[in-house]
Length: 403
Image 1 (cartoon, rainbow, N blue to C red):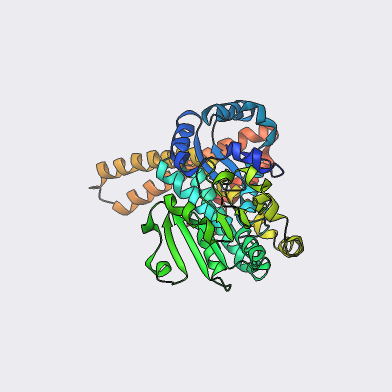
Image 2: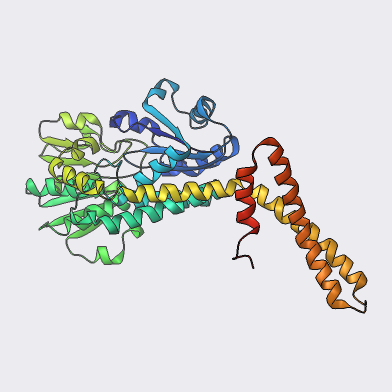
């Protein structure tokens, strides 16, 4: 059964980070859940942690098992939501289209869903149903993106942060962490008249030659970053570290605007109490551009039918899959009947009238099914169910498309 345990969207960042699964622990978490509970894909981003499962466990039993495996605090269980079957499927389709994002309609989520799916494949934690579900979700998100054309009303956490930096006339910046979010920040900064950008990474090889050859950009190591704080007016921190990396005592006494784009937090909250520092976290950034967000919401509603379309398609596929054991039985029965007659034909193939023998064999094969259908029809007539039975038998046998 497809099920989902997720963190409620109204939880603030302090709660969300208690459920966050950092990249370094993801593979271990996936394998642990697979071994104990069932097939799993974990979608863990700065705004959400959602665990998609196909498991025989369900309800309270599944939730408790998941909290134990992931070492989550059960006192926080009220901050989670649990849904299953079609509701869970529909939720994922909505997520892939950006309906549940902090910045509604942002398309980063589609890449994050792909990454979550690929991580589960790598860990060997995903089965046939979840394979198909996430393939449908990615296709749904792509169709929504290009049909809805929501990108014509651009807004995302990195773009809002950079726009706020522009309003503050920032001329020099530091980007700590150069993953997907860090690269987006650089993309938006490059559209502004920024004089100097420092990119902080643990491994300088992670910054491409194309980026390094830009004269206004300097790549520095994580250990070097503190020496350059004095040279910047703005810091964008977006690492996947499980702990805080910026403390108040390490910052020079000068004006800063700092955007903490990470979950768990990169920046100690006391940094925001410094007189000369303006600190934004994910939640405060997402509240900045309400006008554009409302415009996107209204536009997206017109294309909600795409979510329903893919939800229904997956549900149909899943229903047909549930018939698989019965289909295999029918095929096995057909093979049994044909093998019997092939054996008879081999034994009698030297008869004088081969045409008559072939006709007899083919007719007896057809009769094997027809006689069984007649027996079932008689049984259902006695039970008073003959009308539905006649409809099904007519669809099977009285069909001009039979080849």
